[in-house]
Length: 212
Image (cartoon, one colour):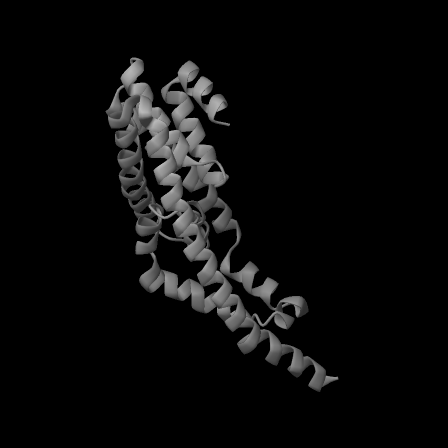
């Protein structure tokens, strides 16, 4: 993968940076922790410049985020409520009101998470979907995404440029930090799942059995 990214950026420059980061937003397993330091390195060996490389990466981030935002808009509150009202979802402990509560919370307090999560692995892309579902103001979504993405891109591209030929070391360190964050997120998810099973799924199954 590294060799493919190297050749692609070397051949297409800014367009490759924007395109790769766009796809990274849609398909998170593509590592921005590799693409961005590598892009920074190319500012030391080609006619690519640091500011324009950061701009290209940020444009890719914003466009990719809006594609996921559009998916979120299609998953409207009403559609999700109907989905979670189905019997399989009720057996899993979900209720239609859960959707309404989550969307209402996002409207009141959660919109700032779009800005914060742009610098957090895994959720940095996925946060665009609930923003779309909650029908967050597009201008505000664009602003938060732009600022958060610009910070993330600036740090990694600049570190790659500063490291020069040692850009892979920056990439490895960034991936290590991302892995730590991922494990923390996985642990939190595991705790939430256990809590959900005990507090929601088990009572839901008992309730279904009692009805029969």
